[in-house]
Image 1 (cartoon, one colour):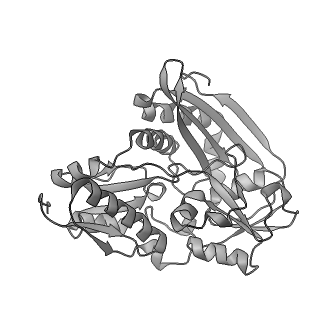
Image 2: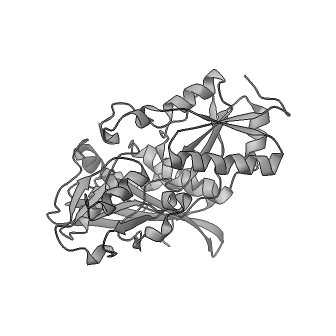
Image 3: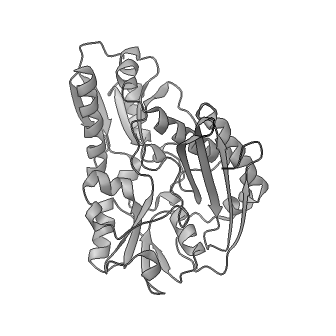
Length: 336
C-alpha cells in the first residue's frame, strides 16, 4: 500500500511513554515540513510484553519486529524507532528514510544521594539493564555492585527513589525527551563509559517503494546524525554483535584540517571488566561505513572476538578483578 500526496500519514509507535514522545516529535516535524496530517497508531512489541532481560531473548529486534511487520502489511506508513534497537542487517522492503538531529548520546548517572560516579562508596548498588554498561562499570574497578534492572526509564528512576538501588546508569537522551534531566547527578564522560552505537538517535522507517512518504521524510534527515550513526552501526555489524553486546561506540563530526571529519572510538569489554580492547579512527563523512568496518577489524585483531564470545547472555553483575586494555589506532585511518 502506498500513500498519496493528500492522505493521512499513519505513524506507528510502541506504547511506552518515551516511545510516544519520540513519535509525537516526529509527527510534529512531518506536519511542519509537509503540511500533512499524521495519525499515531500504537503497536506493542515482544519487548514491551515481557519483563525478561533483553539479552535473554532468542531473537533480535524485539522492540521493532511488530512495527516492521505492520509497515510491510500496509497497516502503517511510518515507524519511529530508537535507532539502537534496530538489528544491524537491512530489512528487505524497508528503508530508513530519515535520521533526525541526534540527542546527546552519552550515558548519565542518577544517584539517590546526589553523588557522581567516583563518589559512590564501594558496595553501592548500581542498576542497569545493559551488558555494555555492566562491563564498563566493572572495568572502572570502583567496587560497585552492578545489578540487573529491567523496565522503562520511569521504572528505573523509581528504583532509585525507592531504595532498590543506590543509582542507575541510563541514556541521557531518554531523560531529555521525558523532561527529567534535573534528576541527573552526572553526565558520564565517554572516557569512562562509551555509549551504545546509535544511542540518542531516532530511525524513521518506511516502505522502500512508498516514494511519497520517502520524499516527505527526507526533509527530516540530518546528514551529521546519519553519518555518525552509520559509522557506529557499521562497526557493530562488522563485529557481528547485536544491540545487547558489550560494545561501546561514539562517532563525532568535527572540522578537521581538510574539512569535516568523523572521529570514531569504540571498545569491547568483558562483562566482569577484567579485559577490554579499545581503538579509535578518523575518516571523512562520506566514508562513514568504511570507517566503522576498519575500526571493527582493528578491534577483532586486538581480541574483541574472544571477549564477545565469552560474554554471558544472562549475567548482569560481576566484580572486576583487574583491567588489561589495548589502545591503538585503526589501520588505514589517520590519528586524531
